Length: 240
Image (cartoon, rainbow, N blue to C red; front, side, top):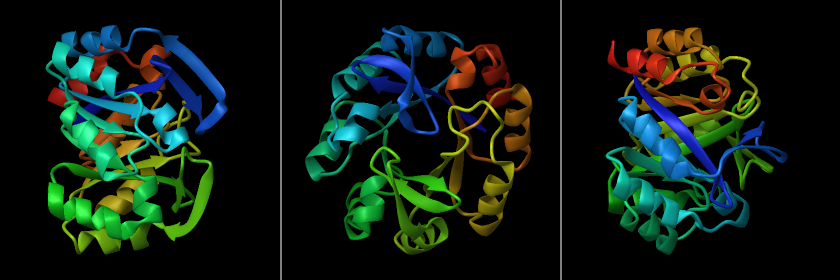
């Protein structure tokens, strides 16, 4: 199971939200490059970067930090937040991201998402499914749509979807444990997908349980900053 430590960015700083609420922001570091280097030094290989400014403003804005992380580390970076246009997607890939997380656009314009899957390839496009009770949310989680997660996944599978990152918003940033049932259900229903779990991880046992149900990956954010799990724990989980 791959481990994706998360860097969520607002105004160039590393922050975390609680349940996707911008009124519940906690800043952890003013130097995301230093944080990324610490992950690399710990032997981790991947990084999940979220442009929260971009998600809120519907336009990629933190690409300079992405460029710097990619140029100063060997981490394989996936990037999301505010990718709403062809230009946004071009900027993300030109700035060095290996994969792009697409959430709001996939809900609002599934036809466009399908075009991106076809033109850029399924290895580069991730469906970022942010859900409340399996209903898709969009635009920095402020809007819950009438689109059910399964309906969207079923549609995109026909177009070659391979990667799904699913965030349970009710769990995100709460340090109350991941929604194991949701990810187990998804893994059974969609065995061909590489599913990454996101939201709620707060101890090593959460990671072990996700690994037991054959999750492709797990995103860990606040648990690192709050010293609930160590970087050594993450390295061990990924490599054993």
